[in-house]
Image: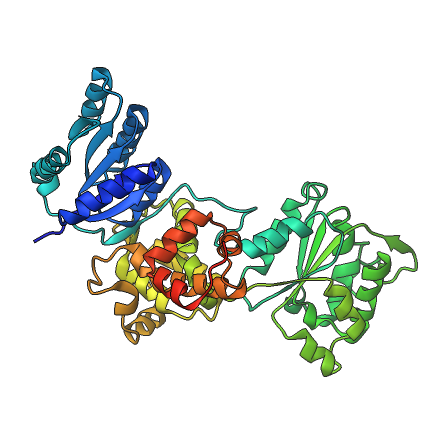
Length: 467
């Protein structure tokens, strides 16, 4: 027998409590939302048989429009103090099952709910979605996607400075994208050049020429004068990727540019001045290279004025869905395909994988899946064998609950999200205000997530919560 789930939309705490107790005593599973926005968040997360909207008629009609547009499988009963016949008719025309004028007796509320639940539409078997739909309306932060609110905050704070920035993180974690975001967040430089140079990909003998340019005849093959990357980046930003690959003599020349903003082209004696923001990146342990005398200590300190450490994807799996959604949108357009969503088994496989190649590896796999897909849904067999094998070695129950095929996406992400929230709470001394800021959500959303992950009793018992 189905235990029907009801969502109460009500902004008044006393009314919330009264309705919650009434419906809970009657055997219903009840959730509460205080606004239209919270209601939609709940509807995206759970399947509800009925919504009891204790609101004014205008908001009630707005909610009904959204429910109709998004095809949420729930009947709606509107309660309102405004006993206007026109409002009642408008609500009914928009699809409300009934319209009750307050004050209304408990028996009337319960009987109306029972009638709604026995209604043909409400009594049909409601099955949780077997796939996560692709959201085409995604939000980005200067081109960045994900939940790295602390890094986003750093980007905004350092964007207007002239300090050198060192981006540190494993290969494929998005250092280039963060460098671009810093450039875009700088109002003075965003319309000037952004030049990047993959130092590790170039032979050492030509790096100097690429950076500083050369004059005609400076070396064999130099048939013309040529500007280097620093000149091209004048007024803008230059990203030096794999800074650890610089030879000792080139490190000295780079140090001069950092300190004095000047250099000479290869084969020339004329000193050139340059105004450029320098961002360096590395996936190596520079402190270790300094200790081994492979990297100049003075250069390290000049580069390490502002250091941004980017965590690997395996440590922020709560971003996997957001990134998957982003890459599906991008590669669907590029390949002229229509992808409706991702199956739960696919999502489970992606979450359980460790991602040694980080975001770059995920992007390549999603591009492949989009190209190979034939039915509009990214299935597990669209993934490479290494991902499938990895997921088959890890039981899905912790992430997906007892019903692997039909569990909702939100439940699939519960474990990594819970771990991440706990990590942030530990880092800020269990201060919920600071934690919400770090997570990029408001305190109400954080509280709802703590309740969703059954963390409230645990926190009250073991930690002093700071509001």
